[in-house]
Length: 124
Image (spheres, helix red, strand yellow):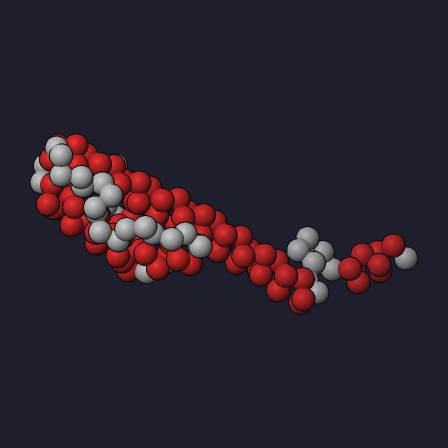
């Protein structure tokens, strides 16, 4: 998923780090950074970002409202990254387990540990 996604996974999903800063310009710059760096993911999934800047959430009427909208956007992006990463991890793990299962089947080994030739001899 990339370096940006990995870095964001280490940050609080609820964006409490941004909320604690109580700084609109910092929050706005985080929104812009995340949108620019992760915009390629949206395109890969067929979603078009309407705005890479923060003009859709920083309206300039009330700094406190603008700040909280930025925090909400950052939390949303981080939550999506967490979800996407968890889904990818499960998918990758299932793929590895399936490949291992298929590869073991190619060897012709029975997993029960019994030797079929000795079973045949004991029945005689």
